Length: 308
Image 1 (tube, rainbow, N blue to C red):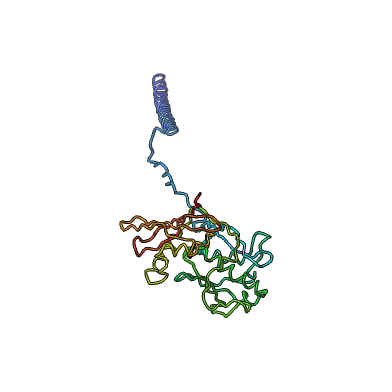
Image 2: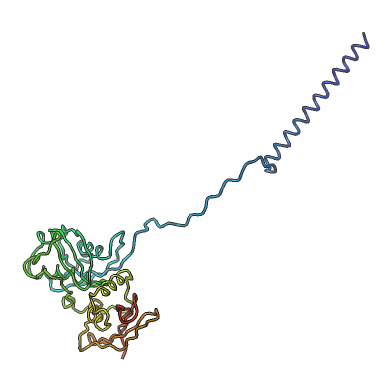
């Protein structure tokens, strides 16, 4: 009896010890695995998160363009036009449309007078063969204050301002899509009008580089190719026509062509015209930005005052 019980006790202790060792070994393996996972030494099949591709910066206002404009408003006596420089931000509209809308908005300088009734709306504007067709709402007539001086300021405020843009030499007024004889009975509007620079006395000459709108110049070149505005093929005639918008007063007796070099190998043609204006002498440089040779239009590139 004693022998059997002792054997049983010994056998029981043997079984219990083996289980403890297995349990300890299992716990040790689990602990080591947890340690490896914590230190990142074991790859359990997880993939690194994909990094986002860098996106190039995008302008929040992609269609906005800053444009410098010269607007002509009335002086307080309604005798002369006075220039007002303004920078506007265009968004999806043409320079011509922006300019006319600024004229309708009125002057920013208290010394300048309004030239267009504020109730007026611009219906449309287009340019063809050097003529800007400006279609106003009926309020340009029905809300106009009348008088010969007032009508003159209104008409030439629009004409002179638009004529300062590339490719515009004349302006045709329309009211609700149709031509009218006059606004207030004094100036005939049935045909396109050229600017009247005599209404802008003591105008300073704009020196330096003249901005070019290459898209507009391409349109002008196309017009010339179709047989319109042939005078643009002569640099002297270009200065005679477009010089006044820059403050020059060229005439037959005070402007002369100094040089003209047309390039046929792709290089821009160059021309120089001397203009005597306001007791000073100016050198006007021209270029052929679209097409070279005899069929390429000329445009003013810069104006410099010659020192004696």
